Amino acid sequence: MELNMFSINNLRAMEVIDMNVGAKLGFIRDIKIDCDDNRIISILIPVQKNNWFGKLDMLEIPWEDVIKVGVDVILVDSKDKTIGDV
Image (cartoon, one colour):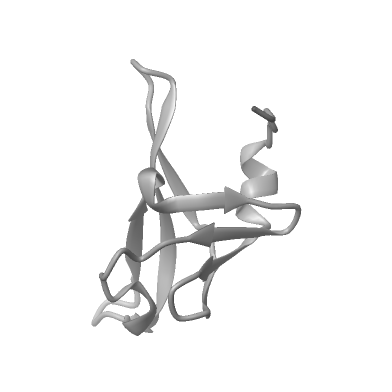
């Protein structure tokens, strides 16, 4: 098994793409980490819609839905969810 290591800054510079519909979801804004288990829980991507107070809504994608972290993209599987339709 090939082990690749990326810094958080590198992950944030990669575009997230939904493999099921081919939709470009955007770039990672934040990452949820479980400090007890030293693992990523989910990635957060800003949604184009702004709410009333100007704060961006976030799309949360569980790390289990990440299929591949490539050189410049992160591929996710929506698993019959409507990730690309937000």
